[in-house]
Each structure stands twice: as structure tokens, then as C-alpha cells.
Image 1 (cartoon, rainbow, N blue to C red):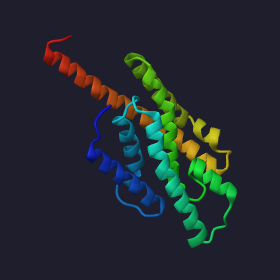
Image 2 (image 1 turned 45 degrees about the vertical axis):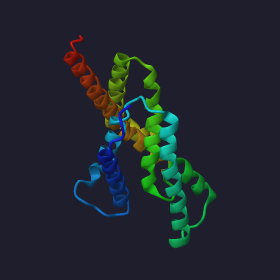
Image 3 (image 1 turned 120 degrees about the horizontal axis):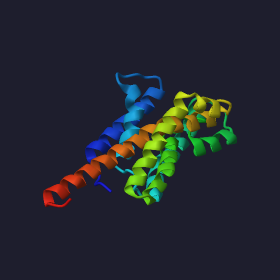
Image 4 (image 1 turned 90 degrees about the vertical axis):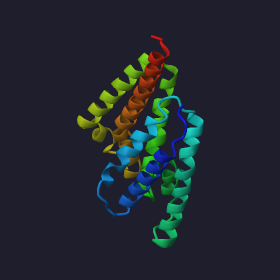
Length: 195
């Protein structure tokens, strides 16, 4: 696993805040790319070799904190009715009271989908990541994503549908990160006189 890069951490922090800012009705130039950049770099630097438990915990704490904050804000500041069903959906899927939290749900779901690939060999991992990327793009472009989730209530439809929309970007981030690592290893072997 690569060392933590503060510059990438700052970029991810900026992109995450731009996503939240955009969902509250504000627009800045290039802001629509924030989700894609954030998803790509979230997997570029960790690939498939992360500790799933640590990653999910790192995602869940802000997910639940912002979920609790949004429920309190919507109920007490905006006067929305308190609905236990919506509170449960907010804490599970992140889209009942505070819509921007779908992204953290999707990031956690993509992490769980990609993590088992760490047990594959390098060639199998690249093949599987490539196939999953192609299939997930076809899934979106064919309209199956909308057909699969379009009938669900919005609290489920949006986070589940968006998970499959960002999955190809996460997969491509893994591939790019792995290729970068593999390229560095090849260069080091060549410099060391190995094959």
C-alpha cells in the first residue's frame, strides 16, 4: 500500500466539499467533475489491497456524523417532520434527509465490491477489473441501471443507482493505480539488472 499523500488528501477534501456545496444549489466551474475525480483518486491510491475494515470505518464515521447532523438540521431548522423510517434510511443509504451523503454510501459499497480482488493474482486482478469496468459501463449506457433502480423509492433508487454509476470510475482508478505501481516495479527491476 502506498504512503499517505497530503496533497491528494487535500484534493479529495476539496472535491468532497465541492460535491456537498453543489448539492446545496451552488455551482462553481468544473464542479460536476468533483465526484468523478474524488472516486478515481479514492481508488487510485489504495488499489485493491486496502484493509476493508479500516476503510469502511473511515467512511462510516463521517457518513453517520453528517447523517445525524442533517436529520437534526432538517427537523429542527427546516421544520421537516421526524420520520423514523426516513432516519433509518438516512443512516443506511444516506439519501433521506441529506442527499449528498449518497456518495459516501457509494464509496463504501464500491470498496466492498472491489476488495475481494486483493486475493487474485496480478494478471487475474487486471483482467477482472477490466471486465468489471467494461460491464459496468455497458450497464449504464444500456439503460439497465435506470431500469434496475428506477422503480424504487428515491431513498434507495438514488444511492444504489449512483453506486453503479461511479463503479467504473473506481475500477479504472484501481487499474490506473495498479499499472502505475507495476510500471515502477518493472523500472526498478530493469535498473537493478533483473528481468
